[in-house]
Amino acid sequence: MNNTDYIYLDHNATTPVDVRVLEAMLPYFTKVFGNAASLDHEAGHEANRVVNLAREQCARILNANDPKEIIFTSGATESDNIALFGVAEKYADKGDHIITCVTEHKAVLDCCRRLEQLGKRITYLPVDQFGIVDLDALRAAITPKTILISIMFANNEIGTIAPIQEIGAIAREHGVLFHTDAAQAVGHIPVDVEAMHIDLLSFSAHKIYGPKGIGGLYVRRRNPRVKVAPVIYGGGHELGIRSGTLNVPGIVGMGKALEIARVEMRAEAEKYRQWTQMMFQQLRDDLGSVELNGHPTQRLPHNLNVSIKGIESRSLIVQLKDIAISTGSACTSASVEPSHVIMALGFGEERAHNAIRMGIGRYTTLHEILTAISQISLAVQRISNL
Ligand SMILES: Cc1ncc(COP(=O)(O)O)c(C=O)c1O
Image 1 (cartoon, helix red, strand yellow):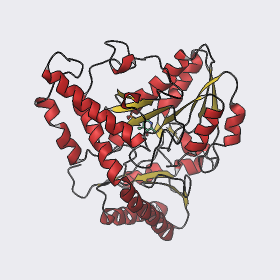
Image 2: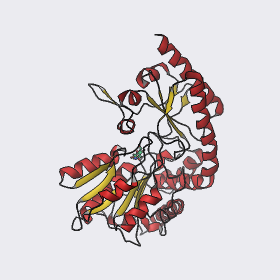
Image 3: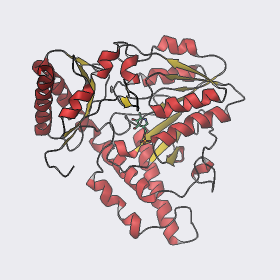
Image 4: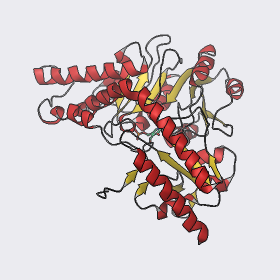
């Protein structure tokens, strides 16, 4: 990584911390280090003040009515856990059924598997060839016992953006709560919990040039007032939903990262959209048989996921030592499991084994992109000639 030629194209996995974010965080390690819950003195008050400022910054980018609707967590994984287990427990009297989707992140899918072991019923909706759930199938899956619909905002592998507003409207119409894992969406594309009828929403700082280990869960307080049982018990922080001393520098950093995103997101997205389109076109011109995974237009602007015919992504990344791209496959000791997301699109195992994901970011240059594309094309030609 000290190599100056290294090209990082894995921004869907994580992003570097923006220097402006780091600078905002630094005083809260050594100078203003009070415990935000220690309100007997000025040090605690100051920490509490900046935490609440960050809460406002989070609320603003989501168009939430009330900053109290933001609960700070350690990241989107924890937020997903609180949303799913917390709603399952609090609404157990009303029902035991949750609807989700096969292409969710493991942070949602593994909670659902555990909830099944605990006796809850889960419906896993399929997706079409672009990774979009069928809204009629969603409507049909709702029963009087359904308490929650959890469908991700934008997919972390293929970038497909779900029809969130329509899903929210269906949930609202049936009196079912709607949770969305928006780790890939917040700070990248417009998110509006009011217009989209979202009741719970997970987000994470490290996907938007903030620090790792900090995230949030939006929990609606009005129309309807949503209740969640805690997953972590203790001192009653964060309205009793998530106990534990607050990570003040992390929270300040996340607030700053979201503030920057709110201002810069639209211009960045436009640039990313042009660049990812250009990358796809260039790969097709160079290599011929390159398929786009995910939706052609309803997609995250900074994500490109393609399968190159006849080229296994594992062999490709071995050749690309100085470029960080991802395959999406999970390696177990015995085998390489193809990505559950690409498999769900229905094109078969080969397409899933050939999938590569590229995610561009704030500091990616056009020169880096052109270099990466030409190196990928050369590596494909080398592999084809083996
Ligand atoms: C869609 C989605 N959900 C959840 C997560 C987990 O987020 P975190 O790393 O903040 O726990 C990620 C990132 O890996 C993600 O992309």
